[in-house]
Image 1 (cartoon, helix red, strand yellow):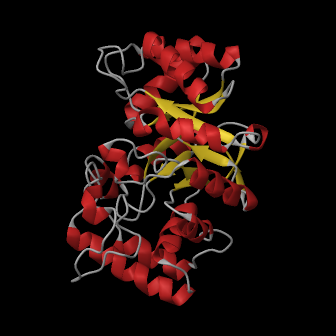
Image 2 (cartoon, rainbow, N blue to C red; image 1 turned 90 degrees about the vertical axis):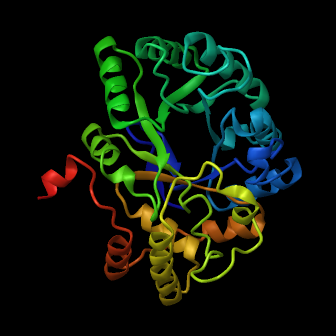
Length: 332
């Protein structure tokens, strides 16, 4: 397993981490992702550790806390061997203060996550989304105190627009507060918006990116094919609810090339799609998911080899997205 620095920090992390959105499945939305229980989660974590993957990503909103609870049970006796990332900001209850990045909410959210995970500290704590109703200073002063207290080691931002991330970094610098060291965002062969605004900022500020949904919300698993009915599984059962948009023709064009390259390399379509992401120097880590051991082992085999220049060019060309304004002006 290859290790890279986590963004603008000295923390070494494996280039793959295991996402735990499939743990629990105790509400309708996350049930479509998976229903992994403690026994299966423990097995997945043991396999990951055997392969050098000691980084596990969760969030308080995943199955409304049940994902964290299951992860906490599954790592019992192994806490010193693992790195945990979790998140807060999204709705966790019906009350007006049960969401957002206010001091009130994120202090409570962190304490709740620590209890569910059965740990004294979080290695990487993300704001899951930008809260426009809370002053940035309030959020960052609170996160700074969390780090100084020892409850949090590093902080990160997820799903922020580029200006929101840059403004947050500026506020931290101006007030000598802890800075976000890592960005977590969506990036895939069928979703390359990241490259237009966020990636240049990541390069400029020396941060790094953890990629979520590298398989385009389950559409790059190799099960979806042109002119074929949807197979049984997550996508067919309504698993595209909330998915990043993509035009069908673009999806099928990308899948056609992925299938060709998978055949050439004797790898699977998901392995090729993940390997393509890891060639981007701003990507520090790709979060993989798995409903079972077979899927996990297959995804772990995305590393230890590289696509060649010709294969990268073909994938870049077929997945190309026209620049948005004002980037197309610069292109001209």
